[in-house]
Length: 395
Image (cartoon, rainbow, N blue to C red; front, side):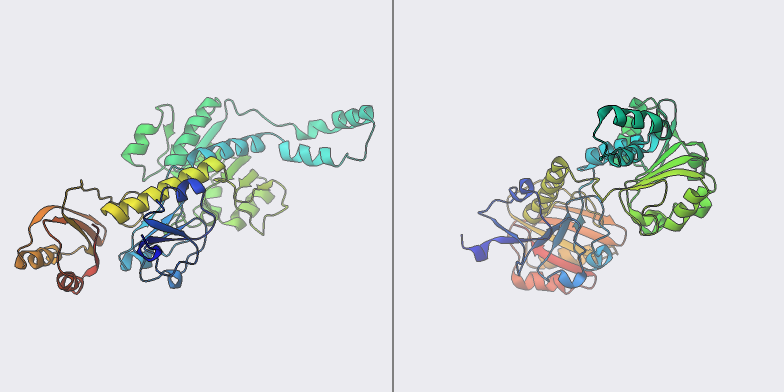
């Protein structure tokens, strides 16, 4: 097969090889700088709509957040955007465990102090110095403390379970919790109906929320006025959900003992009580591989069968394979469009073998199996229907 016959997958960032390997070289060309890609696979690259070629019919992020992708624009243009929820959950959970220990003990401070003694060569002198100063790094144990978990999705539910294994009392808050996530939670996790109540009762609070309009700076001055004095706040979720000036004020007034985050803020760097990591929550070889594999499989499913799983803007759709010709159509979720589409096939005596229509908000997605392929003229006729975003032959 000539390279021009291969389906192109345009990549940004370095994608784990385990994900790239999911695209057979006999069918796909994967890499950067491709001119006519059918799909885009990326990680943290900030993707502008001007970087999306007209040939693109899908975008997948090897990660959970999609705030680096113009999702609204993609929806208007009938492009499903995929993410990989849960693929990096264990990696983030383990870093949250480290964050809890950093908050409970004077680990960072003790390590910094120890390094200041590098000029002392006599072991006895060194030990004496350490014994004199170690009390200032005394911390507390996590057992018996209360952990508040804000957001009980794939990561939050794992963190809640981890808190229980530490011997902590765990409170969870998530007004949008799914049935699936609720089933994953232990009955020992107590539910809070208000985020302010959770802050009032918790010694440690860990955030696991997406960066959307509803969560923008949800951790603000007003909310922190309800928190328990000496609270330790962990943010391994997104920087946008926190108001850094509110954090600064809480640290200065000692209402908040520590703020530990994977997202450094210029205003808070070197501030007493603030500990920052360089966005390494999902930076494990296992998480990167899991995310890349999931993203690649989701793109292949869409390209080869029309199926959609884990899209942030399209409904989940999975229609069993049948021999024949499959058409995928994206349109506005309004009456009569599907009827107009089917009439095009009926007028050509093309029989519909099977079909599945699903909607999400203002968008509808259809998979239609036909007994024979429509003509190019038929497809153009459907494409011209008012409200239809795109139409393509899947196979």
